[in-house]
Image (cartoon, rainbow, N blue to C red; front, side, top):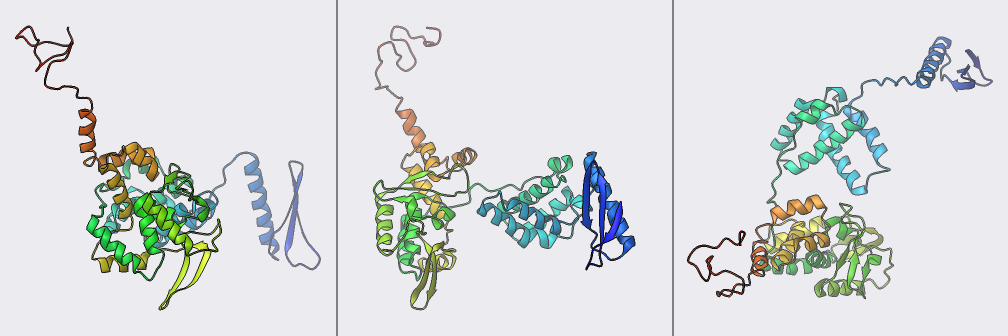
Length: 381
């Protein structure tokens, strides 16, 4: 190994041979003693890598690891999933656990975090998402141990959350959404109610995804792979409202968003950016609900669409395809909406009933033989 200085530089440079290759680098220091230590350290690293010795990492805090982990995931995760992870870290995980070393995060730490978040009013589903984010990071870094897999439990989530709008509530919201200062709220409400689209699917809808001739739209990015690229038929209400909305945007392009970003002042919308989607309808929706005297979430519009299709006797498999449910979600929703399907189940078995109150050829009447008072066993006959 040898150290030398280059013309015009005070820093020491290292040059040495290993396995037939020349390695050169700047030690970034004018101190010869530090340069010698840097040179020895670099050679040990190269020798360890050559011989398959894993590199030792200094203990790092959750705050540091989270930053690097998000950078790594930015290239592979969907924008919506990445946003959920970023919010979980920024708003909750880092303020409470940011100074913890990864090696010190055990089941007790996670259980205390869950309890603390519950006292803050966090919902079990949201807390489970946050712990899921933490689990993904710990697994990536090799700290999700067998003990954590065994001892960490998800919080129980209620399956009865959500409500369907009554016809009276729907009419009240129709009126207040139509009068909203945000002109896109009313068409968004109508399309959501008549298609069951998720909030993000509706917000990110582009004109190229709508086929007016075939009366259908194709969903783009979705929460699940089952929801992506699914085709949703448009009924008359949704089709007519989208056609009306389209007439207000004569210069629209296929790549433009159906519900573009809009700036609203006292006089209404004063600027639209068709190449950017609307950020949200949070304020407009809150105002519309208050004026209508209705307490619901925007997601309850999707619950309403689902409920009404099931009440009309549409098979759950068809509803699942329209709404873009994954197989696991379909199984869960079958339990959640099971009470709605009871009438459809009764109609299904009624269709099998060929009895007219009289015996049929080769059949049985009231469980007895036509020629005997003894009960007849149809299995043994």
